[in-house]
Length: 148
Image (cartoon, rainbow, N blue to C red; front, side, top):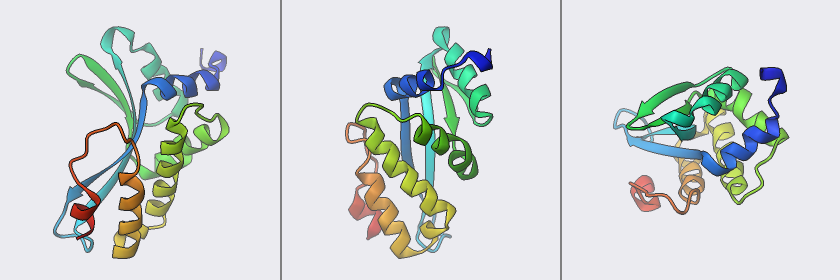
């Protein structure tokens, strides 16, 4: 079945149901004071979850977890994001304005892989980019909270 999957279909599905995001958690033991966590996720009602399992098989990484009546396919590993998720969406791009979030997410992931999130200057740049993503979402932190 994997041979018959159209990668453009998966990109289209993500365009409608997926999310590229970066979250931050206060960590006083870190030099910059914050942990930076990028993640890619796709949610779906449990009774329509077949595509999530297909994605997990297609990408060969990530996990599926239940959140109330929703299943979520998630990839949080920076190595898996850079090696599997980013190349797919570079080759089979999103068509909606979500592509802008993906492009920002891609920059952030590459910066994290290069360990730029571990110094203040790099962290501030990542925070600026992350805050500009997902304009319709709820934010726990403002740029001022993250960079003060």
